[in-house]
Image (cartoon, rainbow, N blue to C red):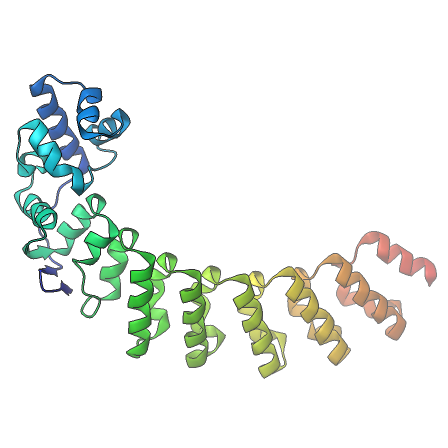
Length: 296
């Protein structure tokens, strides 16, 4: 897998990376050699001592913007701090906005916690990157960058389903737009992998469109748990009103509110008598059922 631009080429391989615990231990050792406390180091860097403490425990990484300053204060090279010559070279190149040569994806993933999204995005060319590559560093990229990557892939004819791994990192509007493309290609089955990420209004609209097209609730069963209560209730009343058959709404009965079930039950009794309620019995409130029985 290759990322590349005018400054960097990032190829997936088994290159050496580093871990935050090792970096933290290096910072701690260098600090103690100078005889300064975490608080003193934090004051010089203009950050909280908790941040320094988290570095030394391996809970987080120094921001790359602090590496140069940290290097000067500790009297050590970035390589000494990071404990990895290649990672140090990449970090130094980013700081100086200079070419860094070839960088493995593993190294990019390692250095990502130190970079802001703009710095990360200079390392990635979405024209060449594969979705799995983008997904591996998605938490460190801006939403706008990922949205644009997805948009370009769709325009190139990539199936929306292949973008599932980056959907959690996309904006709501971009996810909803992706759903429209998926439905165009394969109907509702084409978007089932990411229905949980769609907005309620989008799911409701897709449900109505699917029902109007197929005239059966079976066509929307895959998304029923994500349809709003209001829309489910409206569909139940609409479909029963159109068909007059309880069987036509049986697929969504478990999701219909009690008040709507009671309303439909009343219409059933008026039309078919108490025996017509049998399909609704598991869903009718006991008090309502008793009321119907007393009237009988």
